[in-house]
Structures are given as structure tokens and as C-alpha cells.
Amino acid sequence: MNWRGVAQILGLLAALLILFFGFGVLLNMQDKGGFLTLRNVETILRQSTPVCLAALGMTLVIVCAGIDLSVGSVLAFVSVAVAWFLREQYSPWIAAVGGLAAGCVFGLLNGLLVTRLKVGPFIVTLATMLIARGAAKGLAGEQKIDAPMTWINDLLSVLGNDEKWRIFPNGVWIMVLLALLTHFLLTKSRFGRYVVAVGSNEKAAHYSGIGVDRVKLAVYLLMGLMAGFAGIMMFARLSVGDPTTAGGFELSVIAAVVIGGASLSGGQGSILGSLLGALIMATINAGCSQLGLANWIQEMITGGIIVVSVLLDRLRVGRRQEI
Image 1 (tube, one colour):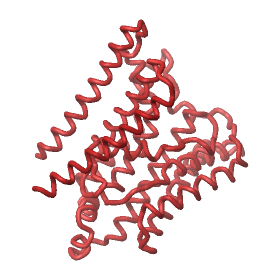
Image 2: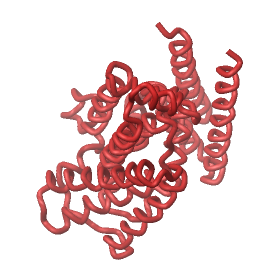
Image 3: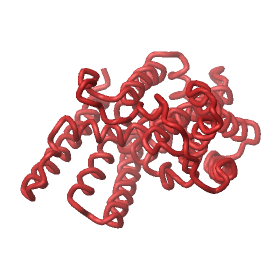
């Protein structure tokens, strides 16, 4: 058993609980109760579901020593594509599948550019970030797309009194199921071992017979798929296709994964850690909002979290090199 990994997860869980109860006490002192309730937990989970879903794919990418700066723009394109399908009177199922396919296309494009052109993933995904954002604006005609209400809108809607037995909306349960599948893929499958091997030492992985390019292509394809799911959930939250949504989304996703213990140098990361990292950031945002802090303060806090997460990553890498 990896006791260091267990200790890291327990530390993240403790930090999340301290933040949650700390904000609850502060709000109660200001006569702003309601933070320490199941309804607020449901709200935090609903708001963090798109980030959590994107973090699942980003964990695989970062463990494989890659990066994806295009995830926010791909998410925006997916949400616009779903709204476009619905506006054109297509079935909600076709809209959902079309959104997932759009995410996979961009993931495949990233993977092909990284593996075939041998261009660094930072440059590749920076380019596709602009391409996806432009495509979203073009498809939407540079305006929001209003779409009819369907079951997709209910994925992250507040549960009614007759739906309390579900505890959380279906979108949250979909995220949990995908997290379990991704955890199994990373920790229990041969593919997961290949991902870690490529991220730890690409040359050694190549000499040991691992198809490095195939692994990278599959990782970016899975990243695109998770961005597709995140885009559908973002549409469910907004109920419109907005080509300008998710600005800076990629930074929140990367920060969540690094806070969760993944190394930007590759070879290390966990799905549970990434989810806890996303929930920590969502809890901070929710607490700051309910305390009435201005948006610029919240943005500075988010920036500080990113700096701290990178510093922690550097410390972890340095400690591993000493060992």
C-alpha cells in the first residue's frame, strides 16, 4: 500500500473539511446560516461538476507529462454545439452525443498534433484553445444560443421535494461514475501503467516496448471526451450555449489536479486527489461568495491557490529527486 499517497489524500480531505466548517462558522457568526447544510453541499457539487469532469481527463494528461490549455474553449464549443442541436429540433440524445463527439474531435486533434508533429503540448493546446474558441463563436454567430428545455437541463438542476431520495442530481452521479471508471483505468489497467511509465520516463517507456505515441493519443482523446461531458454539464447549468463561457477554466482544472497531488513533471497523480482539489477550490469560491467578497478578491485567491499548487509540485519533485 502506498502510505504516502494515503497520507496525501487524508491531508486533502482534512483541508476540505477545515475549509467547509471554517466558512460555516464564519457565516454563522455573521448570521448567514445555511452553509453547513446538505443543500449547500449539493450546490457546491453541482457547481464543481464541470471542473471535476475536466479534471478526470486532465489527470491522465498531466500524469502522462502533458498539458491541455484548450479544455475551457473545447467546453465552450461543446455547450454551443449542444444548444445548436436542440435549437434545430434534434433529439436531446443526438445533442448529447454530438457534444461528446465534438469534444473527442478536439482531443484527437490535440493528440495527433502532439504525436505526429512532435510539437510541445503547451504550444499545441494553446493553438487549439484559440481554434475551439473561434469555432464556438462562429457556430453561435458570436451570440448566445437559446435552446428549448429538455432532460439535459435537469442534469444539474436543484432537486425537488419528491426527488430527495436521489440525494444529488443525476449529473453529479454521472461524474462519480466516470471518476470510478477513470480511477480503475489509471490504477488497475495495463493502459494506466503505460500512462505512468510514459510520464515518468518517455525514453525508458519506448525502449521497453510501450507505444508512446499511441498512449499519448489515447490520453488526449480521453481528455476530449471528458471535456465533452463537462461541456454538457455546463450547458445544463446555464441552459444556453455561450461561446464566451469558461474563460480561465483551464487554469482552475490544472490547479485542481496539481493541488490533488499530480506532478507537472509527469508520472504522478490520482483521480481522488484531483476531485478533492476541485472541491477545495469550489468550497473556497462558495464561501467567499456567501461572505460577500468581491469578485476581484476571489480571483486573487484563485491565483494564489495556483501559485501555491505549483510551489507544492516543485517541492514534491525536489523531494523525489533527493530520494
